[in-house]
Amino acid sequence: QKQESDMTKRLDSLKARESRIKAKIFCKLTGQENDKSRSKEMADTVRDQLADWVEKTILQSSVRIGRELRKNMESARAGAQHAYEESFGKENWKDVLVYCNNSYEFLKQSFDKRFEWLASDIKSDDLHPVKKQIGDTVEKLKETMKMWGDQPKYEGSPPEGATIQNFVDFATPYFQSSLQSSSSSLRMFQSLFPTDVDIAQPCQFALRFVIDLDIPRNCAEFLYSLAEERMDECLTHARNEVWEVARGCAEMCPFCCAKCSLEKDHLTFNKKHECEVHILPALGGTSRQSDDGQCTPTLDRCTSKEFINRPKRQRGKPETSRPNLAEYYKDFYPDWSVPDCVPEAENHVHEIQQRRAWVNCRAPLKRRYSFLTKDTTPTDWVERYENNPLT
Image (tube, rainbow, N blue to C red; front, side, top):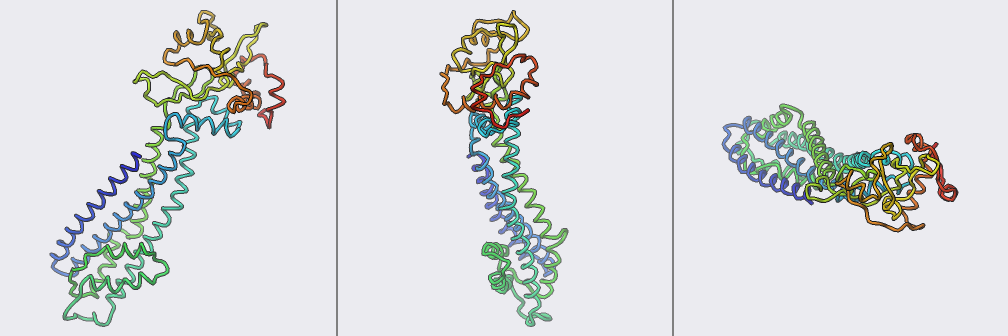
């Protein structure tokens, strides 16, 4: 919404500037002493107004990418959920490994990939037609200006001269009949010229205008470059604005490495870290010590009653032992809130997704977390969830 509001303000500013420019242009043109100076002023005017049209068109089309990017990314909580769904939800085991290593980085990679795809789509759907319309309009403008100046009645020094309105009236049917020109090109063409400017020698004016239009640089090429630059600027602005909201907090759960679901500056409002969806702690490298002294993967989620109430300590540091999660967080992670207890359910979608992820990713995860010396994965999990496991 903020981006669309900014774009609307910029469009209104461009429209207001266009009205002011046209008033100044008319004064300038009518004040010129000869056709040569009028041609130069008119060519500059047309080029500037075409540039304004390019900017307005690109601004309008770039709003679309902001809308598309915001889908499922309208808040920090939505961004965190998106990262989870892109990995666990899609059962892409390689993405699961990236998520478990750094869920914030995975969200950024996923967001950037989505942006690149949308930007490519926007450029194909919106930028290419704009560039084609520019090319068609400039080409037809030069062609009709030459034809207008070459009319027999304008040979020599016609006693009554002509006005720019004569040219507009002459060129309009050609724009209407051109197969390469759209109705929007015609409207754009008709809005380019102040019509009450007198031309003493149309033939010489037309020749000079066609030359002046490409000074100091080919008009079409200049407008192509402008369209590309403005599109890149608008897309980058949209990307940064949406990412600033969707990225949220970069902190991850100390046990399972799930991403914090809150906005990036939530601590300044005395709101502790929390996760929309916790994952199996084993996926983040959390282990338990079995009766025989070996490290086994923690396969109950951070939100389970057993996990919340079980003693906690840092690996190799018995002095950090605390009787439960609340006491452990209080002493070592005071900025984290203890998750609400959620009863495990065999058919809960997140439970199934995470068990499936552990079963199919446990081989590379056990290599990553070499301290996991004993695999206690339930056999029924393996029988039920194994599907193209990573090796």
